[in-house]
Length: 539
Image 1 (cartoon, rainbow, N blue to C red):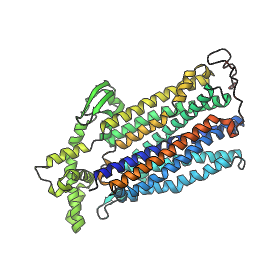
Image 2 (image 1 turned 90 degrees about the horizontal axis):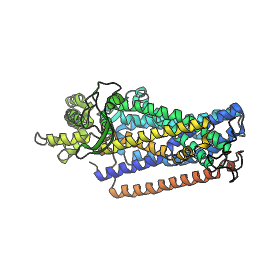
Image 3 (image 1 turned 180 degrees about the vertical axis):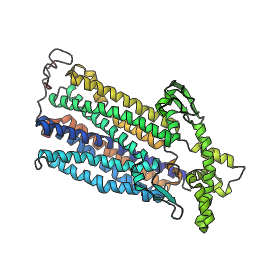
């Protein structure tokens, strides 16, 4: 088996590169449709200011898009370099949606990005608008195919294990594409991107308003972003509930960790835990605070369903582990002799094969043939406990994601309300809240990614392939060297992104050739004083 330190370093490296890259993806997804909306208003009304908005926010989108591409290219290579067993096991299935993403969505997006930036004077207004929508479509199609690949890791449908090649083979491409997990994650992730894009535009617009710069431009940008953000926030909360329901059906261990459930609930009085400090070692919650009668309808959408806790899930895993051990022994025998009887024995237990791999980790010398009646109970206990993800991480990543999501809805709602009433500048606290919240939606999407991926552990392919046997057999020194290298490189990318975004956002739309009003005089009345918002550009 692979050195556990190498496995841990491989996981850390992929987690860091994924988290670095995922900081750019949601903003790209959200800004594309905001740009399309702004340009649509320009084409319909002919007002120059909406073209100025599209040009300015498009420049900031371009910076983010370029850095996002640079950070994303290396991730697909990591599957081959650091996760060779995983690539061998599922490469035929997992590689297909990634190839489609590169050949269709990424090339489509990249091609039309160039036309969007350089085609203003070469295309008619309707033609350029179509190009902008195609950029938005390409970005979201790219996310779709990547999340289809990830959905297979979460719920491996559409494939069947071949004991001869020791690989997962396609059974149904349609089942892979229309996987419930993949589709739920796609809509939830993309709409979360809309929230990121909305807060980005709204927050920078608020910055201009607080500095009394580019007022007409900022007010219009703020209004569009706030309205878009309200809709997106309501949608992401609703779709998040659907994803939670899916976890209850497909990955109950993830749900138990998200809710900090050690014991199976007693409906309908089961409390939803607002606060606790889960102790994974002792398997209990410290200082829990909950709301009774909320958890059952929230998760199960009824008042009668019991939600299994960690202890019940560990107990239920033990028969699967026993069957999985039989499957691994039979698979090994079939590989050596091609005995039809061994194949038949494997087929009886093949759906639990992954649990046998988990048990193999704790067997003497990692050899299941050395399991005896005396050491079997210990192996079962340790393997069963291994089926539960880190509860502390899952519990708090989920709660921070939810809490921030609700906070965004509040900020968007107040921003939209005061903007529609033309009273936005009378409430500087709304502007300050929007400005300070700019990075928080990106942070929230990272918490969502942690919730999804930590909750999948201990599997790379849920129920089939454990993480600890998926990695490549590198040396510890190699992994440390590559990890440090990636961390430095990606930190440089983030520094470049922040520098460019700050620079061009501070310069403002006038620097980009937009036709905007000059900066108002410093003598203009302050917030809340008579005359400050006397002129109303919306009328």
